[in-house]
Figure (cartoon, rainbow, N blue to C red):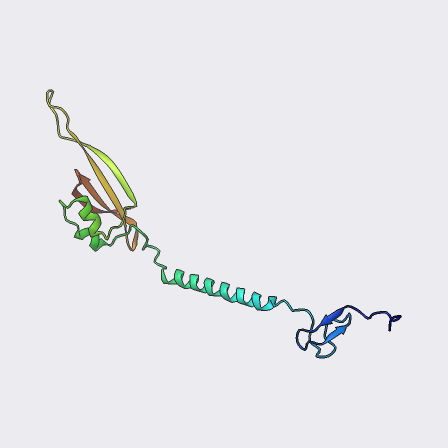
Length: 157
């Protein structure tokens, strides 16, 4: 036996525990492979299933929230009409469910006619603009003077 060439490396089957000197990839006793097979097909399937779940979940959320006019800052005509003149700015925003306006504008208004000796009185107004749900061309304007609502109207346009 000393003069004979060895057939190959000693491999021990992890399935049947038989030791064999062989170049073969499979155990001659049980026929199962010596090497562990990488289970990439299983992992690939898991990744595809998880990705499909998230894509499906995202599409479902998009379809459920497909109100193109119902974005932050929009109000209904009823909400705009329900606000009373004389309310404070914080009361108006609270009555609009805390919605932030899409535009806030400061305007300066000049007082009435002034004589030579009487100074021209001016006061600043701050106007808040909210888009109206269901009408992409309309906004509701709330104008405040000294933090008190002085005008409220729907604007088309």
